[in-house]
Length: 330
Image (cartoon, rainbow, N blue to C red; front, side):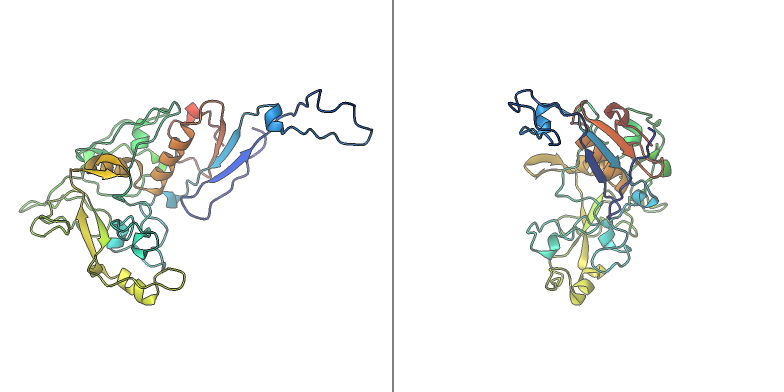
């Protein structure tokens, strides 16, 4: 195109800016007026232009593919005090997923891209509405970037499986490798237990899971604020006050919870927790993955009458099924 599109950046690192423009001629019906208007007057049709002529929608999307989009945490600093993500709160999607009352501070988001057991994580979709494959529910070979491996346009060849924990997205979003999340800690030798991004794995079979039974020797998990921990006091705006922040960011007030290979009900759906965790890992675990998956699920169901322009500052990320959506890259 001859003109450069206007790029609008969102305030949050994972935000998208949408510009919706409808363009086209307007044909007036011959019966709109009984007589032609006098010279110098503008004829206004009583019929809305979107009724007199259908206009194929044009959507422009600016995708933020800056370096921060590779992060496995959101925002850049932890909430409420802009402190460090170094702590168990880095591995908590919300403060306490058992609390669903939005008036309760414990229901608030923590790390916005980490696994939340109250969310059903579904794969991206292609332009025809068909789904990307489910990630490996055995958790022994889960893609670091499930979009890179399975996208219709320019997929990467499947790489090797290793014990890769929870890294940020690879540059170029072309990571071909897979992760084994089921490593264990042997009696002697290398500890291969999967870690979420904070310290070593808390999955120790000599210790008790807060939901009952012993921890397994390795595997997936998340953190939550303990029921027995002091109340998180809040200010007049419902945010933690200085005392509440001190309690919230005390390591001892958090506990690790095992993600077990069981079926639970989430939003009325029967969901296997390992499958759900695998889908989160392959398609949602970084800002970039989460955003590209969400875009595909929106645009992949709009049909072929929609025209898209995808703009981005760099050339790092390919959207799932972009060429099927008539994307125009700038």
